[in-house]
Length: 51
Image: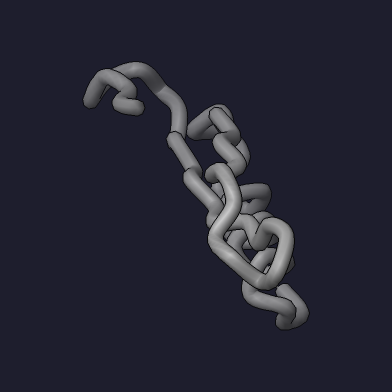
């Protein structure tokens, strides 16, 4: 999935884990450029660390 360079948004693709600890479908979030802190929180939460 792609998003235009000047769309004013961040495209965040986060991996998920499916059955038997196998890779699952990606979780995709579109975050407005006015909310960069939301991107940091999504990435940190997905990595299991505090933002």
